[in-house]
Structure formats: C-alpha cells, structure tokens
Image (cartoon, rainbow, N blue to C red):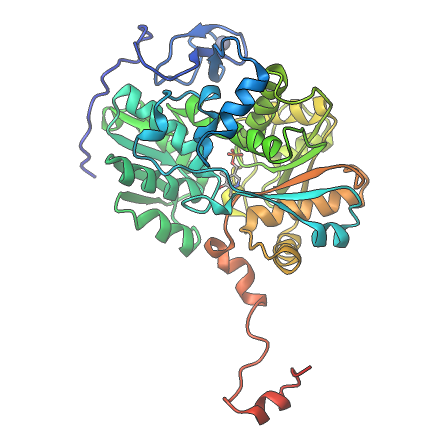
Length: 434
Ligand SMILES: *Cc1c(COP(=O)(O)O)cnc(C)c1O
Ligand SMILES: [Zn+2]
C-alpha cells in the first residue's frame, strides 16, 4: 500500500528537543535508570529496557493542589499538572476523555458476599466507549509536540477506534492495524472516523510485530505509533484512572483494585498513579492491593504468578475477551512485581465465567460491560471464593469497555423472553403477567 509519510520535526537521535510537555522532565529507563531527553523513543540505548516519563512536579502544597484539581474540567485534564501534557491542553481539539462514573455497586456486593464497599469504575463512559481514550489523549499531545502528522497503532480493537476518533478531531491522519477477525462492533468503530484501517491476517502479537517492523522501515517514517514509539507518553494516561478513583472516594486510597491485563501497561500505571498521590500528599499513605485479571484462554501473567515465576511465557490466545488477548504482554514482569509487592494476586476465568459475569453486572447494577469487564467481575468473584480478596474492605473493580462492542459474547444466550402477537390473550398465554 502506498503511504504518504511526513518526517517529524524532531529527530530520534537523542538531541535535546525544546518540547513543552508540562511537568514531564525526561525519559528514564525502567531497568537501568539511565535518563534521556523527551522524544519519540521507547527503548533504552544502554540496555533496551522500556522508557517511562520522569517528572519534575515542583513543590506543591497538597491542599492547594487538591483544590486546583477539583476546580478543573470534568475530564482527565483536571490532572494536567501530573501528566506529560502542556498546561493549555484543555484548549486544544481532543476528545476530553475521563471523569467517568465510580458506581457504588451495592447489589453486586450483596450477590458476591462483599460486606465492605464495592465500586465499579465504569470506563465505558469514555468518548469511544473504552478506557483507551485516556491513553490516546496523552499520545496525541506527544505526537503534536514531536510534529507527527499520522497517528497509528497496533490494536486489539478498542485502541484502533480511540486513535481514529482522536486523530479525526485533531485533524491528523490515522492508519491503524488490527487482527482481521475482531468483533464487528470494534471493526466498525475503528473505521467510522474515516482513517485508514488495516486488518492483518494474524493475531495481535503478529500485528504488533508487523508494526515494530514498520517503525524501523522508511514506510513508517514520521508516524506516531501511540503504543510503540509514543508508548512512554501513552502509558501515563492510565494514571488518571488511579487519580479519579481516589478523588471520587474523597481523596482516599481503595484497599483493593481489580484491573484487567492485556499488555499490563494499565495495571502498572495505576500503581504509579497511586504512588504519586501518596508522594504528593494528596492521599494518606496506607497499604493497597492490586489484583490482575485475565481470561483463561490468554493468561500468561496469571500462569506465571501462580507458578511463582518472574518471567512470563508467551501463549497463543484463544478467548472471547479479545481486547485482552495479548499472548506476549510487554509489561508482564512488572505486573508480577506489583501484584506481589502489594499483596495482590493475578487470577483468570473461563470464557463461560466471563459471560456469566457480564450478565451478573448488567443484572445487578445496570452496567453493560464488554468482555474485559466480564473478566474483572468474574475474577473478583473467584478471588473472594478462594479467599485472596477480602470482602470486608473497600474494593474497586474496573470495567474498561462497553458491552455494545462485544455483543457476540452474550447474544447466543441473551434475547427476548417471548415473541408474541400484539394481543392481550397472547401476552396472558405467555405467562409473563404478574
Ligand atoms: C487495552 C485494554 C485493556 C488493558 O490494556 P493494557 O495493555 O493492559 O494496558 C483493558 N481493557 C480494555 C477494554 C482494553 O481495550
Ligand atoms: Zn536501560
């Protein structure tokens, strides 16, 4: 396919670039700690470890910072002082994601035997109906800062739609890559925003490998791949989930959080976000546990956790939870560290349990989750049953996407109670009148 490329205004050679990404002070290697200037780079030149954003938050009075955040917009931009974005980010065309509902799930709590407080952080309320709008919004600002004019990604479905929509609104070109066999809802949502959408004959890990090759090739020159060369910026978007949960709890840490795992990025950045809130004095420093959730058909991190391994052995995914179907998760080892350090765990559930959990959440709380939400709710149930999650404490379960995008998962077992002629007799005969 012939593809127009545009060179970015900054090189990847490591020269210090005068970019304004707010409190982001540079990049640092997660393995060896080496520092690098801000740029579209994602791997350490010394050890090939992953790079993440290092901040200079300056001196903040916690009370003032809390007030400033509370007075901010009802989106992730209320946390701009803690994100790698310019201070005037809210004035630029973007989808203003975030500030989604934290649903107090009393009915679900009763069903699960939870005696403490149970909440569902419902990220289906984002502009493209998944948590991916949070991460793409950060990557978009980095793309603007580095002068990229094409936004791209390898996606398990939701990311493609989030990139397409963000690029459309920002006036950038987009070209996104997905496995060819995704759910119709995800394919249509990835295509409708008018960008280029390419189905790859293979699974997500094949798509990801392809994108890594494309980045190293002149064909991909000048492209901002949100989850590859912009990954350090992209990843920071997940911190906003941690910020919102704590602020919505009244500036309080939850005791336990259950987070879905695809690449593991989201889980690691939720931990980073909680640590920052503690360090900045915005919440009281108390212990919290982070639990990871996978589908059995793609459970490399759960398998490693249970086996006591530090490394994650890749798997070939086979599950209806396609948004989480990453067989070789980049952040897997870091997820293991966090689950073990905080006293959490990583658990998995079968596809059947995923479907049951989607219906359980819908039936008890009126929240229709995609398969990833079925995974977290199903894993929460299992963790309570096997005694790893304390039902007496405050627990937050993440729903990261919208059930309308994964109708295939529930449609075989969900439908009308009866189909009848439009007559009272027929209704009476159907036995539904109470
Ligand atoms: C991408 C995604 C996740 C988690 O992704 P990570 O790669 O682990 O950050 C969770 N839920 C949904 C619905 C997703 O699309
Ligand atoms: Zn390094």
